Amino acid sequence: MSETKTPDAPRAAVGSTNKDNDNSIERRSFFSWLAIGWFGFAAATGGFFTVMIRFLFPNVLFEPPQSFKIGFPEEFSPNSVDIRFKKEFNAWIVRDDESIFALSTVCTHLGCTPNWLTTDNKFKCPCHGSGFRMTGINFEGPAPRPLERFKIGISDDGQILVDKTKSYKWEKGEWENKDSFLKV
Amino acid sequence: MDKKDSKSILEKMGESQVWKSIIRSGVPRTRRQRMHAILGSVFLHLHPARLPKHAVKVGYTWCMGGLSFFLFVNLTITGILLMFYYRPTVEYAFTDIIDLAEQVPLGIMRELHRWAAHAMVLIVWLHMVRVFMTGSYKPPREFNWSVGVLLMTLTLLLSFTGYLLPWDQLAIWAVTVGSNMARATPFLGHEGPGAALLAIGDINLVHVGSDVRFGLLGGRFVGEATLLRFYVLHCIAIPFIAMIFMAVHFWRIRKDGGISGPL
Image 1: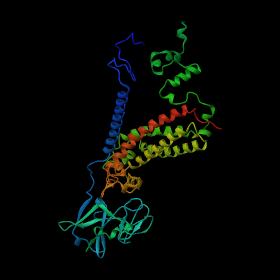
Image 2 (image 1 turned 90 degrees about the vertical axis):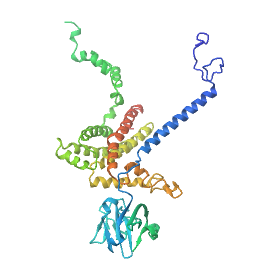
Image 3 (image 1 turned 30 degrees about the vertical axis):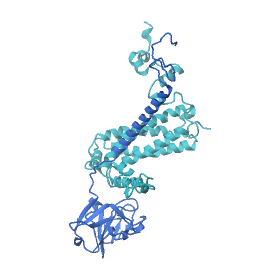
């Protein structure tokens, strides 16, 4: 295709140095626009996938709240396990001789929910037979560590407040923490 | 009698506009025409146009790839039928499964789906065993082996997501245990290595309410959101991805020189 035959036709002028033709694109500016184009494309694609992944994380959960009031300390009788909050909040309230604490109902083996067996005085997991003392310490079955305890304290109105966003592990010595039990 | 009238019904059919518009060529007579007919069909072109004799020996292939695909088609059909009755909500899921067995005509449909699913997992593994034992993963087929590994993973994910849908005790606790593994994902799971590093001051970015397990379950535990999520993954997302990879898998068998032969 010679220039003389079609003088006015816009040329596919990548790399052309013909300054007379207004439609020509400088090599340098072509690469600039190409780079901008690719960055724009990459940013749009990245943003698209980011938004799609963010979409999978809901803002509002229709789950029971993470912290909840369970009543006054004197309502819990000594040396007993209170199973009233197991179903909704996944926590046992245990009172021993000197303290009240909230145990997580999640078995430390594979995450099933054990049962409190009053006659055997232990928590027993139906999945693989792990057993825990009233304190939460494991003593039989495959569970590798004791049950976790939740943060417990007294709220302004004198009721016990359990906060599940903070948990305390025995093997890390966290049961010494003052927030992990309630002195009675 | 005119010569034209003496043609067989098959020949007349082969020359009709309806036939030609669908099949794109007349009744194939020569090898070349037969090859052309195969290549001209979107369904048949995935399959080899010509088969070497050894490829049809069941003793060599065990027909495991074909059976895997057969079971996938089977599961798609029975699965679509089950979707007409099953509602993925905490209120209805369990009773709908009972209903499918006891009230819906052909109560065996759900069992067909279940047994085909078990069989597919087994047969995909056996397919892999066969390919491994015959050395068919070696070049030029190493890419197709990788696609096959992906397809096996997708099969297991289909099996895992389908496991939750009956919403009985076995389902809930099996998926609870299974999804707890995601807690230990490096960086992305709140109990995984490196997760504690992703923090601003005292605030953990990766915790039980923001990690990869949370994204999978749609909550802190296996609940209503999880059931819906697994239902969508099981019925739409994973089969869709699997179909794409299956098309690539079958096409690459042809491109890599057909089915591997005995050495």
